[in-house]
Length: 186
Image (cartoon, rainbow, N blue to C red; front, side, top):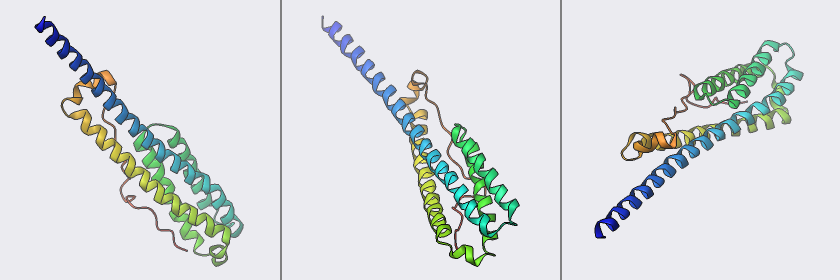
């Protein structure tokens, strides 16, 4: 009788431990997925600001067609990457858009009237705020991935990874030379 109770207690404890391990891994994985979604939201927000910025610049800089087309292509790349789950593709599309925006900023320098346009200034302010939010979202995602990856490789949680269908995730790495947000100054 006593042995039966001890066996029952051990079995219940193991089942509870399994449930806790499963739930901890799954909830940590969901947090990482949510954090990646936060990056997507900010990348999409930035991509949504681009057409307004391009239209504002078009009125002043009609002969800067190549730069404006490059920004438009890069925007489309970010939108496509945001719809997927490939973290390196998101980072590469983000870097391409940052580079195109940098070239746009250089082109804008030649138009003092544009730099004083209130609509343009408002768009630039929103874009700068979005860049800060993207940086925060990247940091939040990498923190969530760090927590998940630590669980996945440590005992006892690593024994539940197969059951929970959870594995290590890639960190969001900015491409070389893109570790900081672009400087926006007019």
